[in-house]
Amino acid sequence: MSRRPAGSNKLTRAFKRRLAERGISLLETLIAMALGLMVMAGVLQFVSRLVEGNTTTLKVTRLEQDIRTLMDIMLQDIRRAGHFPEGVSDLGAPIKFMQDQPTPPMIDGQPLRDGLVGSTLTYAYRDADGKLVSGRFAHDAKAGTILMHTGTASAAETISDAAFMNVTELQFQAARTQVKSGALTVATPAVQIRIVGRLKADPAIERTQLGRMTWRNPVVSP
Image (cartoon, rainbow, N blue to C red; front, top):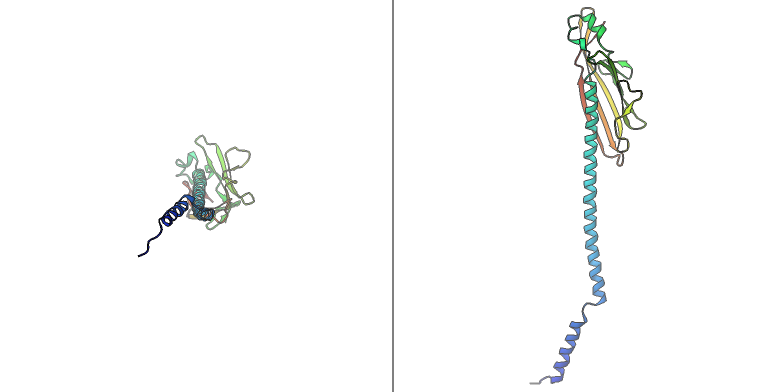
């Protein structure tokens, strides 16, 4: 049985020790860096998509809230339409009721009739002191906004945020039920409101809000 020379074992141990002391080569370092960058790129892409999705969700939520707020503002003021202090006391006197009542509502300048559709609603009501107040809501299609004109204001006020959303549609559709009372017609006007808005930054995102209002006082006409 042959034995290795003692010097051979020392050389082997020395070679192994040199390999251990040499560490990681440049090629191995580059490969490790490349793999690390690939993993990092995947993580960053995932985080970017997550942030983008959250941002879009927040914008959609705000769009829905803004459209609901617009509807609430409109309904709150339109709810006063047709009101006048003498309304209750005049119920038994149709002629006086007709004389005291404010100007009947109109859509696009036309008296309300069942099925009438337009983008501008005008109405009037009287305050407790009898002062006549006129109101109007209209769609500015060019600017993509909703205009509100009430009271004694000299100019209409924009109530939608033109920098955030584009109001593509404001629609008023009339509904009118009426009965004959002798020579007079007693009608109960109602209007359905439709608002459609799109994100300014992403027109593909669109939301619609519907509302309906019925006049508290009837409209009496010959």
